[in-house]
Image (tube, rainbow, N blue to C red):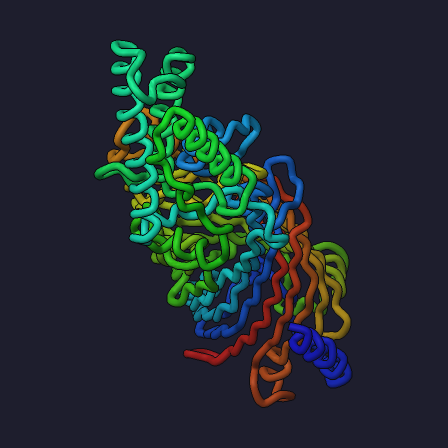
Length: 553
């Protein structure tokens, strides 16, 4: 990017030095204007657009990193119901009432970038009517970076090894079987000793029958909780996450097992062994990939990686009609104030593909759907050096149908963006009726020479809320989730831009240049925004336009 900026910085002084005054109409500069092409003239545009962003605005207009919603300090039960389910079991087994089942600290940095090709062809169909078609060849990319448990102490749970490891599964099975045997044997022994207190080995039981019965009751409940968390009994697999093997909770569980073993041994039952359940390992980046990709865990996603969206972005046809002007054929001859007014209509035929549903972060190649745009163009001139263009646009996209994994309405969010890890079971076929979008831009320009204009631009965009619905929602709760997601689709944005244009169009017509073309450069920066769909964008656009003749002079 720095090399492109250096190229532009060097090119403009050279163009300025090469420009020569000429008594001919000048190009207005970068951005849209109210001018239409002379009848028979063709304008062919080719260019490149570079976007990049690593921040996004929230509903209050505050900037947040693009990956903020995917970066919890504690990835706990707020983000996964199975982690929430582990909490009461671990608390009961370990006696640690403050235990929080967490996979640890997750931080995902994210950078969005694009390098698009811009193509347009236009024809002066009549003296006041220009028609054309345009297309964007998209290359959009999302580049994430994952940091998980950087200090190696943040997580309290990890994968349950019994889900994938037969040794761990057998270890848990042995432990639960030992508990069940100890409970059953001691229960029978209590009954026997109550019936015949003088029986050999009954002394300890008879001395504290209530204590022996409490031991049996507590051990049975402990074994049931072990089975629910770790698995062990027939057809019981436990939860996907269990305490880290060397963590405080696992040590406390092992100590309680040691306590049960000692209590049973005091009553003459030595069936309990010395080994506790198989603990998990601290969650790692490799485990994160396994969680996303392995069908065992219900997400069915691809690994977090750099993802590109290639192909046709927006494809449209358009027309512009000159309604009024008191500008002569030579803008260099303007004295005082002058005005020119045009109206345009654009029909978007293709809007690119919808984002892939099996990617953690998925770019799209375009706006996602068709639509039409009505525009008003007003050029204002003061003398032959100053001009400004006011453009007002109203865009109305067409409805779309697509699949999406809809987050729960109560999913944790940062700045309105919900945690992006959503189960495959929440994929719903959606119908989107987009809201309309209003764009207003003001572009003042200054003529440095007869061939070179510099300018700046301020723009304001306002997007109305979408209306979303789904015939595939399985319940009223899912329908409410869809509406909750749609409620955050409105946004506002302000941008500022600067740039310039060098043109040989009039010089070529007067025989002083061999080819008619102009070169424009524009740098745009997002100034402010509200609504979490607005990125803090930096954009550079470089375009070249050629002006061949189809007929006429």
